[in-house]
Length: 286
Image 1 (cartoon, rainbow, N blue to C red):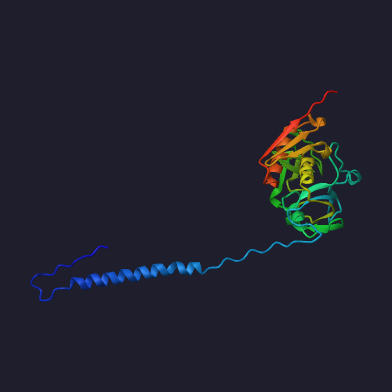
Image 2: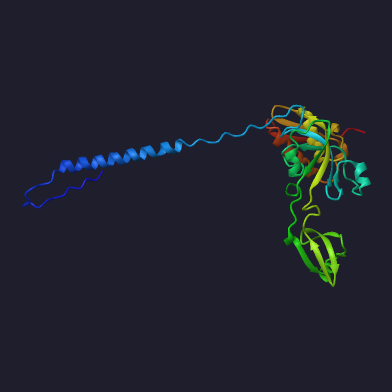
């Protein structure tokens, strides 16, 4: 603490008392310290709001569940089917794709395996019951954006090898688009999703609730190795490692390395006790 002494003229009749000044200054300092110490007490008085407890549903879907689902999505407005896990429905609606794997789909609830609006409404859905879940546009494919409509010269599209006609779908400059109108050498192109602005509905049924550890592992394998019977994979788990035997029918499959890496990342994500994934191949004498 700095103390300043005031020196009076030697001819002054009264001289200041130095001790009085020091005591007065110390009192001022003590008062300041007391005020600074009181300030944090006000901050400690602020209480944080308690987090809401997550609801748990009995005999129904909960967030984080591994489930297999049969599902078909359509537009509420037109009834047009745009997505289905059923091969029969896909063929009837003109959606069938050669080489695509149909059948019940793996969904890990809350992890974005399906549209956000559907994902959020799955908890509480009863097992083995067919239900309908409606989803508003903002939680499905978004609202329509007028700024995503563009008029393009006909010749520009033709120069890119595109034959524009109403309803034609193509990709231009890395963006998916659909032709809305053609006339007078100009084409109106719509970059909005075809289902933007529409309410959609999913008819679905949860056909299986997967809880067994190895069944979950096989479900994750089936998601990446499409069309392969997951029982063909051999699984052996040690304390911190999982060894996966690759069936010989996929030795020369396309994108096998990408699939193997994808499965490994999935397994490491959902099984915290596993530190290492090892794949092996077995070739037997024919």
